[in-house]
Every structure is written in C-alpha cells, then in structure tokens.
Image (cartoon, rainbow over all chains, first blue to last red; front, side, top):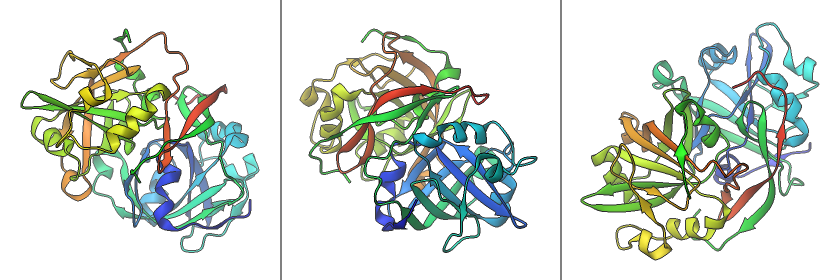
Length: 178
Length: 178
C-alpha cells in the first residue's frame, strides 16, 4: 500500500478501537513479526502507547535490546496471516518469507514497516520500568504512516481463540471528546 | 439485562477487541460513571487490566481513594449515552439520573454495575505505581458478569471525535492462540 505521513496527534484514532496489530522488530540484521492485541494509548501527543510483549515471545529480547519496533495495523484480508504469525515463532521461522509479507524501510527506526498493512507506527521504547512485573513496554510513536485511500479500515478485533470481530457500520455522533 | 457469572479466565475475550467501556466508581455514597477507551489486558488469570484515568476526570480521585471500580461494557444502543457521559462531568452531574442508567449492586465492590450494559467486571486497584507518571492504574478483575443471551455483542470502538466502528461480521479461523 502507498502510505503518506500521518500527523502524530491523530495516532490515537488508530489504536483506540483496539485492532490486532503486527509488531515488527529487528536484531542482528533479521526482522521478525508478532501478533499483538494487548496495547493501549497512554498519551495523545507525543503519542505514547503501552503494550505487553510476553517474555515467551521471541520479539521480547529484540525489543528489550534494540528499544525499537513498528506497530503495523492489518485489515481483514490479512486475518489468516495474523493468525499464522501468532501460531509460530521467529525462533525457527522467517515469517516475512513464510507469509509473503513485504518489509519496507522505516524512516527513523531499524525494524521494517509491513507494506501490506494500511498503517504503520515507528516506535521507540521510552520506559521499561513495568517490564519485569508486567512485560509492559511504554513506546513513543516517532513517525506514523497511513494509506490515505483506506477510509473505513476493516481492522480485526480478537475475541479469543481465533474469533475476530470486523467493523461493519461506522456511526458518528456529535461529541466534544477528542 | 439479566447477567450470570463469567469465569475469570474468559474476561480477556471481552476487553481484547478494544470496546469503549463505562467505568463506575463510588465515593461518599455517590456513584459516578465515565467513558473510557484507554485500557489493555495485562494478564489472563487472575485477569489484570491496565487503564488510564486522567487526573482531569472526576473519577480519578474516587478511584485513587477507594481503589474499586466496575468496568461495564455497553453495546451500540447506548452509544449516545456513552458520548453524553464523556461530554459532562460527575462534578456537577448525576449521570445515572441524567442518562437513565440503572445501578445494580456489585457482589464484591462498592461501585455499582450498570444494568443496561451486557457485561460488567468488578475490579480492585492492585498497583498505583504508574499513576503519577501516566495516570495508569492496574486493576484486578475479581468478579465478572455477562448477559448470556448476548452472543455477538455490538460493542462500539472509538475512532476519535465521536466516530465509532460497530462490529459487523465475526470471522473464525483455526488458531492455537488463546
């Protein structure tokens, strides 16, 4: 997908609705990707995101050591790929090759964007104090990319055991909330 | 809605997909409710949830002082109520009365369940170390309730400025993931 830069103040609108994301890391010249649903916004701008990357995930060591990652947001066309990424490990699998994902260079961090995802958020780890207890990393989004042609993204929202809710209608109500 | 007890190990499936929730607190005999989207699972069982309750929210002081709350999950029928709750403050408004919400006694905590929500999670604050820096509370879900008749809940997922994605289809893929 052809992506353009997204103002950092608009990042919260991508993550608030709770999509499954694909987190990319890179270490020793090798990129990896994992599926993730345990993330939340922590601050609007600069955008801070908190996320759980378990010590059982191969990505944990790379994230802790390099302090960089990219949060990529897939749509429903990638649902089988997302489940596939969640069901194997970067320890013994090159997931980009196995699932036909296309790495694209990021602007500010080493891990790649995933071309097939409609949005990608380049992140740096800014706080690791909750890692020991909760595997909880605080990330700052330093650069955001979005495919402007994707108006109502069909993000996928995990309900457990491979069941995903996919957005149908979008409703719009007058609101003073950001 | 008539709710039954839900095993705590199933709570993650309610919060992973990122629904807007209504957080109830109670202090000095008075209950309040706020709209919230910045939450994440932190652990499966016992279920731990991290959430941001801003110091600007009237609920902040109640949550910090009483260390109890209920996470109630509304469906699309309550969308206008959710926006209304987000656009006024418990400082000067009894939101239960204003929006016709029905408080129900919880089993283990003082704040009420909201009868009109299809699921309610009774919570205790178990960690406040991230409150000063991020307004981030760690909650343990101690009792969970769900309306068993609500099979594909039409939860609402905030995309910013009063726009909400509502689930359409549910897709199911074979997965070894929890």
